[in-house]
Length: 96
Image (cartoon, rainbow, N blue to C red; front, side, top):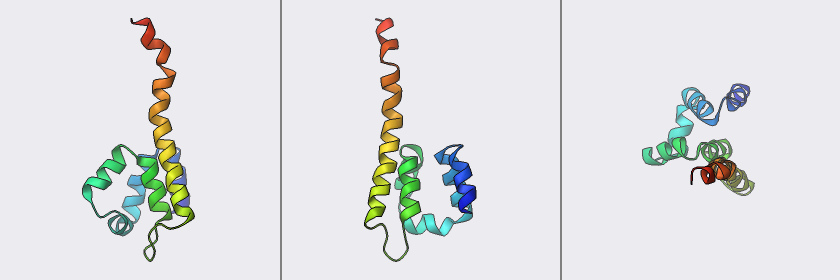
């Protein structure tokens, strides 16, 4: 299962989330209790959600170095959103 999720990561984090949910729905329901939180994570912060689900354990939740991995996923999400604005900054000036 881990190799399939890794292959799907190359297609995008949302494909990996859907495949992981279809293989282990109990992990999703135990780790993320709120439908609103899971929808927001799927649409706005998919890398953070993947990192959280990867390091989450049923006994302890997310602890220690796991939070560093979740923060790295958040950094990837934020850089994906801000990279498009930085790359298009000169294009906006041409329209003025």
